[in-house]
Image (cartoon, rainbow, N blue to C red; front, top):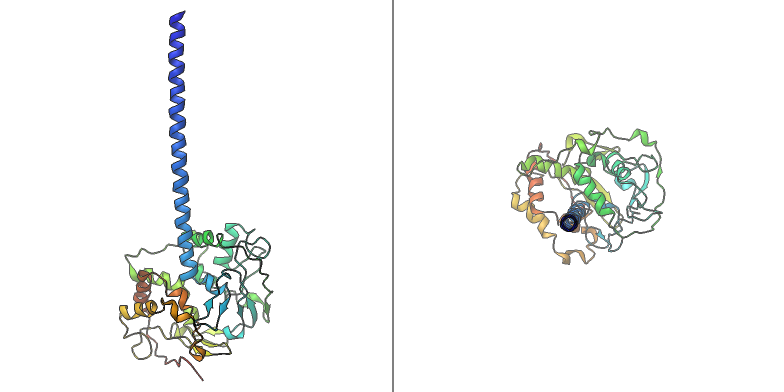
Length: 322
């Protein structure tokens, strides 16, 4: 009988030891998994912040900008609150207001699911099923990778909620007449090129930054595709007038004579905060240099390499028209 009790005691002790070991290992694994998940989420948010601020222009359009500062400096504390006005200056038949994209649950996107935000960003359809006017460049975001889109969403959810109520748009035409043809059915179908192919990667970055939107002239509310990237999009903001630059590789009127280093230096020049503290008057710029200038050097070089491959267009642009 003693032997039986002894054997049972030994087996029970061994079982408890095993349970303790299993619990300890499982607990350590859970801790490691949590840290890995947190690190992964933080990396995703950092990537989304970079894209939203320095590439795709989310913060540029959906914040308040001070046009008494060079390039319409984004006002601190207004990030994502919306309210920026888009009207005839942008060849819009009416007026559209940038939406509140902070996590506010009343006036922002706090109650939107990820899938609803994806649909708005890539297809121009909001939570209620309404079509967004394509001043929101969803035809371009429609071609961005799933990872990039969800990274932007992860970052937007970290913004400080702002209860700014944005006015409703007022258009003079049915949206169905301007809804663009989209090229991709889902971000899951889109592939972001590897940086080893700088031209293809640059084309992806140019699309993600919607460079064509501002650097292509318009006539009668439509882009002149034969002059794509040749500049001449006209902005009259009251206090100043400015035309966008020709960024085709035309050697006479574009950037055909620019070296890669010259192109990079143009962006690096605007990384100096001192440039954004005063009112330049009629020498202002609509391009948000304070944001785009902080794009990674590699991404800027890739953009340059792609732009050098597009058809040159001879289009002499007067930067500051009278």
